[in-house]
Image 1: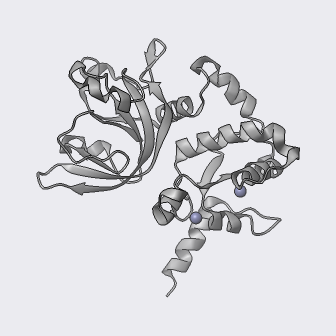
Image 2: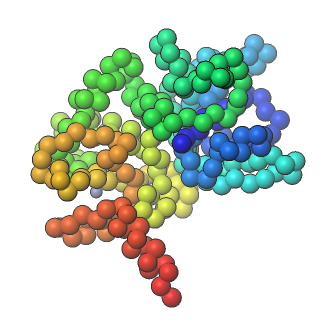
Image 3: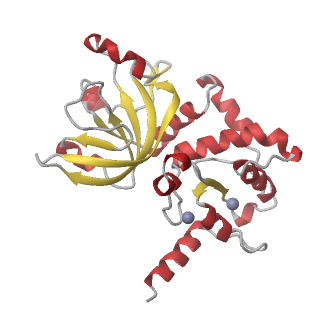
Length: 272
Ligand SMILES: [Zn+2]
Ligand SMILES: [Zn+2]
C-alpha cells in the first residue's frame, strides 16, 4: 500500500515539505512507517492566489514523492509523520489523467473522495504517477517509451547503467545512455533513494550535497541470465548504497540477491 498526502497552501500546522506532515488521527490506519507517499495539492483557491508561483500548477496535481519514516503523536492526540527521501517532481502531474483520474475512487466515496486529505492508493497507482513524473513526454507516448527502454539484456548492460551513475562515459554505451537515464530516474522515483539492503541514505548521512545519490542495481533472475529480457523498473531495479552494491558483485561468478545480503547484515548484527 502507498498513500497520498495533501499539502494545503495555508496550514495551521508546522508542516515542512518533505520533512514533517501533520494529520488527524482518523487517518491513522492509512499511514505507516516505511510506506511510500505521493504529495498532492488541490486546486488553487482564489483567496490564495499569492501561492501560485510556489506551485507546479494551479490545478489539482501531484508534486513529489517520498517515504514515511516515523509516526509520532502530537500534544493534541493527532499525529505527525516524519518524512524522508523526498523528491520533488520537475513538473506537475495533473490529478486528472485524460478523462480519468490516477486515483481509483471507490463507489462508496464518490461524493466526497477528494475531501480526504490522506488517501490510500495501490502500489500500481503510485507507480503510474511516478512514471508520469519521471518522463517528460506526454502521457500517450509513455507506453511506447516503456517498450523502447525495455531492452537491457544482461549484466553487461547493467554495467553501462552503473558506469553512467558514476559519471564514467564510455562511447560503447552512448546509445544506451538516454535509456539508462530514464530507467534510473524511474527507479529512483518509484523506490526512493534509500538502500534496500541496509537502509543507508546518502542525503541523511552526508547532507544536502549527497541527496538523491544512490546506485541502481539491476536484479537479473538466474533463469533469465544470458537471455534477453525487458526491464520493469518496478521489480527489476533496486536502489542500493555503494557498499552493498560492491558486496553484491564481489564475486564474478555469483550475484547476491537483496535478501541474501539482508540476511548477511542481520546475522553479523546479531553476533556478539
Ligand atoms: Zn546498503
Ligand atoms: Zn548491480
